[in-house]
Amino acid sequence: MRKKGISYIVTALILIVGLLILQYSKPRTINWFESYVSTHKIPYGTFVANELLENRLYDEKVRQIYVPPFEFLSGSDSIKGIYAFVNNRVDFEEAELNQLLEWTAEGNTLFIASEGFEETFRDTLGFEIRTRYAGFEVSQNQEHQLVNPYLKSDRRYTYNKESLITVFEELDTINASVLATVKVPNQEGDGSVQDVTAIKSPFGKGEIILSTFPKAFTNYFVLENDNRDYTAGILSYFGRSENIYMDNYYKSGKSFYTSPMYIFLNTKELKWAYYMVLIGGLIYIVFEGKRKQRPIPVVKPLQNQTLAFTRTISDMYFEKGDGKSIAEHKINYFLNYIKTRYYIGNITNEDYFYSNVSARSGNSLEETKILFKLMDELRSQDQVSEDQLKRLNNLIQKFKSQRNGK
Image (cartoon, rainbow, N blue to C red; front, side, top):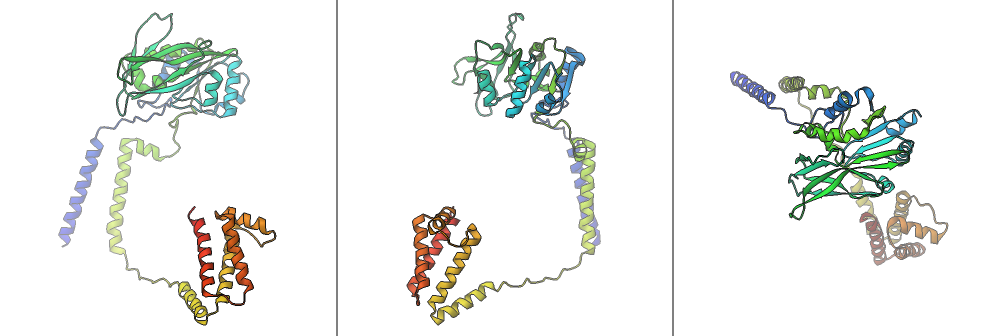
């Protein structure tokens, strides 16, 4: 028997080691989470675009900001340049939005690449957006193009990883200038449609640049074919600004991780070492605990005699035929229920009391008055019949069931 036990253990260990080897040698899965974090090298991170900004286009003018815009702009009056936000969704609070717009109106540039904009912001600039779908789990063949008379190019940049694209539906045609468009197949299946995806609008002494295609700044898009020219073309509208402030606060992903477990679980070797320690600890607990465990005596819990006691007392009253006492007890118990459940004290003003009880319990005012009128009648009587007790009980149960049914 002992030899059989050892053979089982050895077989289990071999299977576990084999499983770990298979898992370790398995190709690493691609993380398609849309993080938009400047340090992430996953497909939908923005590491490449930030490198393009910092090392190719604007040298040392780029500064990464990790605090909310309200806090950043409130810290100094000397902040001038371009404030850029890139994420799948950027929603500012009212005070923060007003401060950003005031800062822009002083002669600065606000750049936002997002698939959604808050209503107040849309109303301020006079535009609306919509989404063009290709269908459920159907890749959409998108052809993006920069619109600039100085480029003199009809080149299109393809992107077919998504099944939808957000576009501008209504624009302030007097002030807004179109910077980029997208051509997608029509939903009805006939031909294609062309929509605007990037615009530039003056705002006070400054200007606002908006894009509904934030994925143009992700690693996947920039490294796909020659799409980096499209991204560089959008970034070229930053001009010769002295400072470029890249927001890292409004991001779907985390810029840094505070948990030490992230280091273990994000490093392949450390992750499997951690798993092996857990498995070893589990094996130790199973076999070592089996040797040392002792039987635990079963202790029966004390029975709850409250229900039996209540039945005994009620039988005594019922056999005695004292309907008056039973009615008194039910009424007192119900009044205590009203007091503890709805926090309503003694009756000082009947109309106010009935209205308060009716509103809090969910019963109608008429039903509430009928119940309390019956209780007053029974209290004033010397004898209470069985039919009256049944009616009292039915009204009380109906009153409570109305509360439970809400």
